[in-house]
Image 1 (cartoon, helix red, strand yellow):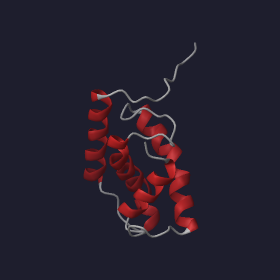
Image 2 (spheres, helix red, strand yellow):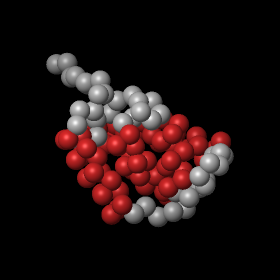
Image 3 (cartoon, helix red, strand yellow):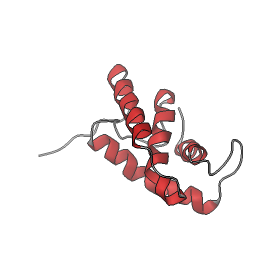
Length: 111
């Protein structure tokens, strides 16, 4: 399992803001970390990936979630978002979700 911190750092690496093993600037980290809940909720609402605890992310979904997060924050770092990259990551997340259980808490709607 991977954590929220791992995901934010990986997204910053994908944006080429930090290199492997380098610490992130506090402002950069906070910017991406603040975007994470809305990105996960949006992926969940579109049935791409079920939203759960961001500190318990499956290893097989991790890279694809980092890509989605990086693409969502790309404009903030002066990098143009790449729709093709985002779509490939989302499609892979759909496949992973369909293939395996997410082990995330089930969200229910009460009427």
